[in-house]
View 1: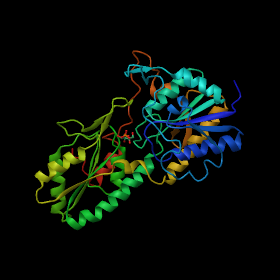
View 2 (view 1 turned 135 degrees about the vertical axis):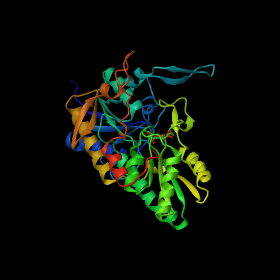
View 3 (view 1 turned 120 degrees about the vertical axis):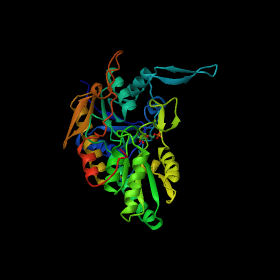
View 4 (view 1 turned 180 degrees about the vertical axis):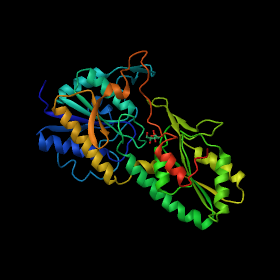
Length: 375
Ligand code: F6P
């Protein structure tokens, strides 16, 4: 195998806290332990095409460990294997321009890539490794919905934000005897609502894995009124749906690998409750992108460093086509094909999500302390 003298980093897809911790860990380990150079491509894979990159040395990554976001910026529209290319007549044609990227890597003397992202970004990582570029993937998402790793970095920081928001919502809910509906992200999984709601003392938690009956939510409010607690906190996942209905779609983004953006179910529930419990005022807060920013938590800084340094170790050991993962308390690795599938026609999709088990320990614990799931 060719000697590794320069490693490139790419951050793709939606951002989350901890990306800078991974960049910090990769750069410090590569430079300090291995004497290897590092460059960071900007705005995901498009940096490979636009020659947009920056050298990362110890100075460049100094002071970024705790910061949210990514110093390299990110993009969720950067699939170089199916890239929108404007034609002379103004129309757009989707083309595979990945060869150009491989050529640019050679030109820049980049011997290996560490790609940090979710499903879409890691699929491109798999495809570049198939083209002979040594690639290691690092999983990220606030949703914690990747089955291949116990925890993704970013999740813990979002939980801290949700918990802090619920603490703040509590005092104003109490003062006005209000019903407060708080919507959180998570796509089609309820981890953020479940763990954030439990720690933030929510009275009702509505998640995609347990379709809700709005009348059961009304029952819980009545129960609290009867107990003399005249306010109720309801946390709802953006992907939650009623027993007789579907999810609320906020937006369709045609040129994104995952076209559907959820959002707004909290507003729908608020309108319904305003009619069903007219003796209470009902208010709605959507935590939205607050969950994606902020100072990175201790846990996410540590996990980011562990993932980043392990990715460098794998590259230097001559490995490719793998993704680092957390299993129990160990950082190990798994083939990217087992994470995102092989992409072969007829393959059963690997794109499954790690969902909350409605009969699992978390839900059982929440129910045991009186939290309603609207079921
Ligand atoms: O997957 C992370 C996530 O924050 C989801 O929780 C949310 O549904 C989505 O990304 C929002 O995407 P965008 O940044 O494109 O609006």
